Image (cartoon, rainbow, N blue to C red; front, side, top):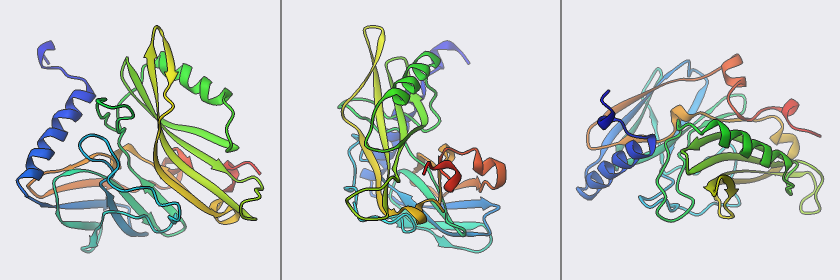
Length: 262
């Protein structure tokens, strides 16, 4: 491809977002069909429209949310086989979530802006290797209220890197006996004078309070293939192969008891 036609993931994402905004202003809507391969155990498919065009949350985080009942903006209708259909979705960018038997939740995300005037990054954005090493080391050495803080995915460019982070506390607490907490957040590290500095501001995607014993039986993983699904004014299909076995185990996120320290 000629150099003049190349663009970064952030630029491509910004263009797609602008197209969606224009279509939304026209009042158009379209069906989104999610075609699942290996989804026989799937019980629900939902869509989050987490952010507005400026990266602000469309809905506040519910502290009483449940892991088995995602508070999506729209639920798909099972149309038979592996087909799940969202009828007349307003144009925009959606993150999909899949629930399946045996306590399985698979979710997509988008790297929303942390600071004002920052661009979106798509979920498949890369992070510079030097930044990745510095950030992972910083998170590992930092102290937190949670006893398990795990960077799941990193994406950005040479000036800013965002991190999808899982924060779990399953140690005894005086808050509610036997309860644990799990949060998923977006953090940002910004390049400043040759170093990477963590911004104090974060974006919270989910905050769950639940019995620790139940938490340790769940699988809640994050897959970029389910994030940033663009819907315009024409029907479209999104194909997804539901992971199982080793592919599922390799997706980062919450896994059953062996992955949580006691």
